[in-house]
Image 1: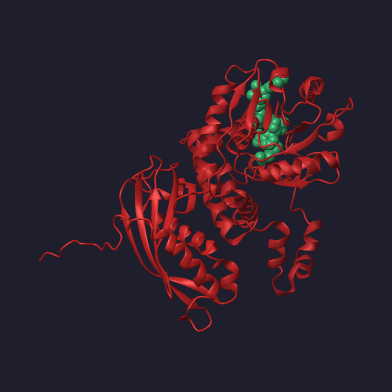
Image 2 (image 1 turned 90 degrees about the horizontal axis):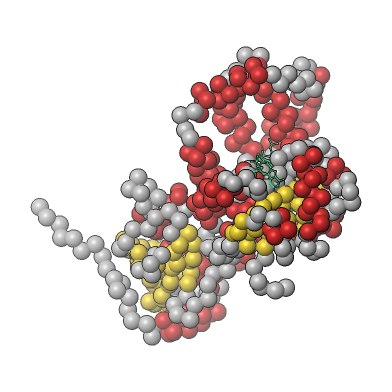
Length: 479
Ligand SMILES: NC(=O)C1=CN([C@@H]2O[C@H](COP(=O)(O)OP(=O)(O)OC[C@H]3O[C@@H](n4cnc5c(N)ncnc54)[C@H](O)[C@@H]3O)[C@@H](O)[C@H]2O)C=CC1
Ligand SMILES: C[N+](C)(C)CC(=O)CC(=O)[O-]
């Protein structure tokens, strides 16, 4: 396969097209946009700004260099030589049919052609023998991994590989159905919600509280069926069904009965929504949503649950840069969540970054997860941090790690955190001791590790002692 950047055509650059553009671009693809709206490039730039401040923050590795984005007045231009075509025009079958007919005329033969449609089936889109599949994403497309794939199995399988490489989670919908899987669920909650408000049972805020304070939190890490299995107690799902099965006959839902879509319903919902969130701009709400999503997804990554497992798999494909110098043990962007009220990276996260560097070094010498599972590891017994220059959200940093001593039970490392200008932003000097995890006592490392460390330490001895090594807080105590 050629290593030239791949390119995607984004047809319709609104909320969803803009999100797709960001997902492709930030994963190194070139993006070619076709949208007749003269405001399209401005709107997409704001989505890109959001994506740049949030997507890299999910990862403890750098994403590939950004691709190039271009805007095209003719559809045929936008489709020139592309590998993927993503249609995200408004959800109207007549508009979709018209644009699909044009796409079909100009699309490269090998390109995947996908529609973002929330609810139309491939059989409704492909009325003239086209080869469009559904690739239904979730907003914000640059952060949320789920994409529902519907249509020709071979095309969906190809699409699936691409989506995995973009850090997404393709879900094959095996049987086409109006509104796919996820949107049917959303639609059920949405319709029920409209009734609850129309009938004056609750306001938009109270309904949102009911989601955010309870089952919304559960659903990010386990779905409906796993959480209800647990809700059945020790007897699990069978007990849950025995208890709540009869409720299916009770009037606990109005699902088949949709409130009439009138001006007064629109006013009721919009006014309540203004009262609930009108004090914040859409941009502020987007930032709040994205920062929360990043925080949640990063913590799901630690437990490898739900979207965290997808994130972790993608992260493993992001390689550290090769170095002919001291080894690079971290290469990443600073997430917003690492900054504090002083508007810069908080002190605690310098240690977190250095701890990631130590973990990477452990992998390099063969003391990674398998070694730990075999009952041995290193424990940190001392750290000394020097904060030299400020770092800010979005800054790209890398860390080099020098072995100052690696003999017997002791391992003495010196991490230099290099900021975006190439300056040393901080140094973290770390002393570790090799441990037997069964006895919880210090012990000699394995012969292989001893050997590896010896050769690294010998090579690193050729470098001068780093500035600041051996420092302590030298402030004299005054009375
Ligand atoms: N908004 C959402 O939450 C989600 C929407 N979707 C689906 O994504 C698609 C797009 O929805 P949104 O982005 O929300 O709509 P939008 O209204 O934000 O954007 C639609 C864009 O298409 C452009 N457009 C209109 N006609 C066009 C044409 N003939 N050629 C090229 N561009 C054209 C418009 O100028 C506009 O920029 C729909 O199929 C929708 O169901 C999917 C997931 C979520
Ligand atoms: C409301 N909606 C049908 C446009 C929702 C979606 O398609 C998915 C989402 O992001 O909620």
